[in-house]
Image (cartoon, rainbow, N blue to C red; front, side):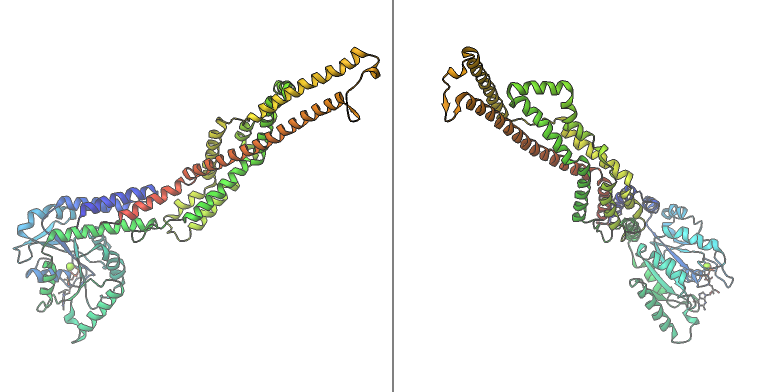
Amino acid sequence: MNVARCLERLDEAVDATRALGLPVDDATAVSERARTRLGLGGDAYVVALIGGTGVGKSSLLNALAGTEVAAAGAKRPTTDQAVAWVPRQRRGELTSVLEWLGVDRVSEHAGNGMASVAVLDLPDLDSVAREHRARVDQLLPRIDAVAWVVDPEKYKDLVLHDTYLRAWSRRLPHQVVVLNRTDLLPDGSATRVREDLRAELDDAGLREVPVLTTQARRGGSGVEELRRWLTAESDDKTVVAERLAADIREAIGDLARRAAVTDGLAPPLVTAERREAALRDIAGAAIALVDPRGLEAQAVAATRLSARRRGTGPLGVLTSALYRWSGRARASANPATYLRHWRERGSLAPASEPMRALVASALPPLPSTLRPAVAALAEPANIERGLAAAIDRAIDDEARDLRVPASVLWSAIGAGQFVVAALLVFAAIWFASLFVLDHPAVGSVALPLLGPVPSPVLFLAGVLLAGYVLTLLLRLHAGWVARRWARRVVSRIRSGVESRIRGSVFLPLDAIEAARSRLAAAMKDC
Ligand SMILES: Nc1nc2c(ncn2[C@@H]2O[C@H](COP(=O)(O)OP(=O)(O)OP(=O)(O)O)[C@@H](O)[C@H]2O)c(=O)[nH]1
Ligand SMILES: [Mg+2]
């Protein structure tokens, strides 16, 4: 049994539990106790006789010793201070252990085949002297092994079974139940009582705990069996190590249970699918505030402005300059500013709702210890703060380098518009020449006709139509480019918001899951 490794696991479990904000006092007490016990060393382990008053604990110790080590008597209770019976050759090594236990009444023996074990006779658990039980409770966590002593009257005692045997069973790999005073039973009924006690222990899940029957008085039958149990574990270090490891294992298990980790498994508090669905819903609500339609309108206006500058020929240069000069361009077409003002378009409250629902679905099966930490994940103020930061950063990334799209087509259209303008000038000159050079005899000028229509008129109409078609083409193309661009911007903001929600709104949930996984890992290899 590697206690050092178990202690490392316990430290990891304590760290993980602290990260969850759960109390760790019991676990750190176990850790300190184990480290102290390991530090004390000694080549003997300590077995305590524990039970109700008058069951014969002191008498059993005297029977083992073959002499009166501890006072036994009819007065109830008799023992009020722990008495240790230790092998003389180990006395020195045991001194620090006994000091740590607070036991100063020590009786030595020559060994007698019990060279590795110190036996403690303790005060009772159930007399009017409450301080006796308090003393046992104080000592029990430091004891290496226990012989629970009962008698035919008290063997069903609930306090012993529920408060002690059941509670300590997993922390004490070396324990035995001793049914003493069996000589007081009528002939033949000792076996029945023993079987009854056995069944009682089995029902409580204590199948591995052996039951011995003894008579501390009148011949001391069964006392040799108790002695064999006490000396069966020849390697005292194993007893101490197994006890410490069991204690540590239980402490880790307690921490893990508080965090809904059982059998070394930390099933996720919410499934990956539910989490992704919540993420999408939260991002969707956030994107509603970013307002894709509004952005599209802004993008179209800004793109058309830019297209007008390039693609409307000499007239466009003039109108664009006027637009800019008057400030209208800024007011009606600034996608970046529009994005940055997302807060003005509504509240974040609906965006925190999917998280609240997600947390509410995770809470019911959780132990009460973990619930507050998980419930805090649905705290609207926290969610909204994280979400606002996520939106701000995603928008900032996008708005910082937001460039209104441009197209070479617009320059080509612009060139076309210059040609149109030139042709208009030409048409104007043509008309002027007709009036000025040949005025007033218009009718005398031979006008080239194209069918019934004079060529200059047709020419003028054609040039104007070409100008109109180019303007329309520019407008339609700029609108199409702008909408496509706006969709891309929204989609980049959406993925930016989603990835940031993962790292902000879901961060506390991830921290809880990480701590639970660490607890699950700490349950292995100990
Ligand atoms: N008949 C019989 N009497 C016993 C036996 N063991 C102990 N007794 C008697 O039971 C009484 C109580 O014995 P103790 O050894 O003082 O009991 P204890 O468990 O140490 O009691 P506390 O010190 O009060 O906790 C004494 O009068 C003993 O002589 C036994 O096996 N058979
Ligand atoms: Mg006693």
